[in-house]
Length: 433
Ligand SMILES: Nc1ncnc2c1ncn2[C@@H]1O[C@H](COP(=O)(O)OP(=O)(O)OP(=O)(O)O)[C@@H](O)[C@H]1O
Ligand SMILES: [Mg+2]
Image 1 (tube, rainbow, N blue to C red):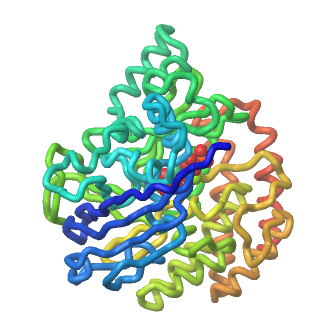
Image 2: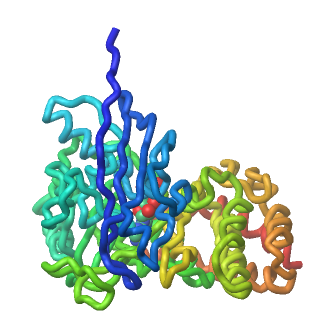
């Protein structure tokens, strides 16, 4: 029998400079790992962080207080900035090359390159932060890959000229080898004149053109009055790659990492998924509870609740069922958490698929329209107000075939989506009659 021994690893947590706050240490964390799982976490804030006027609890489980705090699992905000399933595949491959077969939650945390990491945390495995190298663990440097937009364009040109297949071009770009390409959807950090974009590549086992459907959905969401990051696609052979502006970065990367808000360079914005913010919520009512608990004026809270309702109505209208609470998030600007732009949204061709997050207890898509009315009641949104939002959502969603053609979707993909989207849209339209 193979038994795994518990190991303890210390990680130092720093904050990058944000548009509102200077860079500095946040604290340290000891993680006890058994096999791959973090079974115990001790976190302590650095006294200099606690003394800052702009200090905030960096994760909901870590209230601002001196002394170590013991948790049974990794704080949610750190999970949010760990490697996703694609990044984990890359880290696993590197670990295997080093003869290591297990990937711990700490590996998934520190194995992400500092430059690409979601949100504003920076992690070190060394106590000293004297030099920038401290933030880049050896194996983290290329997880995920950082590309310049010109490299993507060159790959597109190569496939157009017939010099390489799109699969070859993508595998080369990602430096991934075909062995790791299966399963997870690859992502990369793309630089366009120094600005940060997120690229999502197709997974070889995608049953439909998920990338273009996501581009369609984001365009429709924008037309429906929701905040979205700027989105475009780039064609590599017959495949499309999705490019969206990173909402957790502002400014342009240059060789000097800024330490204060006014400095030139790229500033980072703290991020929490709604999963983290709600502490494992399962219902949009949990998200509403977080919004109501915000330190904000009544008007701001009401606007956020209306925004939340419109997002849920939009997700129902395009039959996006993968609406788990890591696909919704908050950004921290001007000392306040606010809903971040919409991301990871696409229609599901399986009409009867249950929704991932409940709307007032309802996950059955057939019952979603009535649940939306109940949600509006729970959020205190007047009938005239939600009807206006819904009308705008439906007008936007109505235009999906034009947008799909513009994005280059093959017409043989239309029928399944037409059925899925049409079904939900018609049911929602009845709420307005
Ligand atoms: N525009 C963006 N800017 C910054 N971070 C983003 C942006 N879009 C997504 N993210 C972050 O990247 C993570 C992964 O993105 P996304 O949810 O789109 O991919 P995914 O869940 O792996 O997608 P899929 O299920 O389609 O493979 C998100 O959970 C979010 O934290
Ligand atoms: Mg996602």
